[in-house]
Image (cartoon, rainbow, N blue to C red; front, side, top):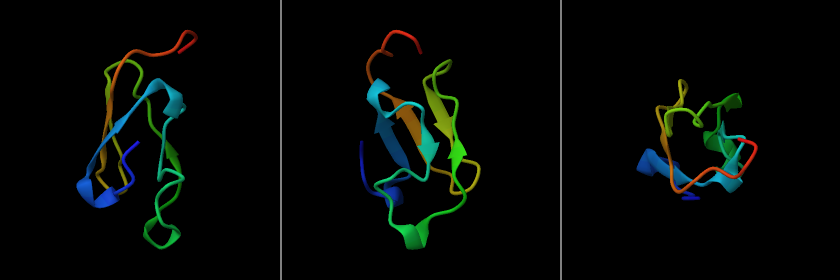
Length: 64
């Protein structure tokens, strides 16, 4: 997973699910309340707090 929130587009894999923003890699001082993002159906999710766009890369593991 990309670590830089300034990029505003972050690619994630099935291993990053369940997806939430901010991610553990983001610095505490630039975080906002944790929100879980439904990315499984469309392959993309936009954080309503910071506007970061998450894009699913690859296939989902079984069970998702």
